[in-house]
Image (cartoon, rainbow, N blue to C red):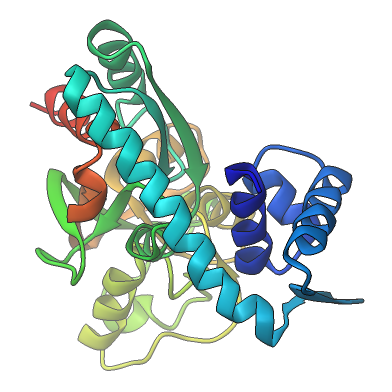
Length: 292
């Protein structure tokens, strides 16, 4: 039995799908299937039920998943202890990101890691903010950038890097058309809303609550880039970070509405357990130095 087989087992259990699991462990679906079969043969039990819509854990698989996760964690702890004895940080760190790598100062982070900890490698996983924070809390990611307006999140160690102003962007047609004068008029426009897992969702809900309305159902996007694209095409108004909104306005993709502004924070998050691993601590230090 090899650790890579256990990691594949956990990936399939998490994703419920061979293709997505293969992407998570950086191999091919046939290789994932072969590793699972080999593991099942060695253990003498069936771990999954293969169904048209995906992979479902058997009762035996559910019991052994806990042991697999415990074994992987023990191996990582042993590697971390050895690295501490050597006084070195090494290994791969899985870090979640939001959609704009430039605003995250990732280039600076990579440069600092290369100079200070050349044996630490970063794997970047892009997703919406709340999804990445949940993945960090579950141990599926080691750390993450996220937009979050909370000072504390249960189970996480959160470092606020910079404040982000949030503004309303109207479709380009409002360059030649009278814009809404009040918040009450604004919320009656068509809107491109953000998904409940997006870091901008709390600001969207606050805006509509301030106007005495609920967030409308309808057109929704789960990334800032998608919101921009839909606003630019005229589907409705949307929320964006001010820095992105200014770029959009200069490019003729939207008009900033000056009657409302919200605020959130770009944060870096990890767990206390993950930060005991020298490589994760090294990434934290590189991120904080980049934002000092």
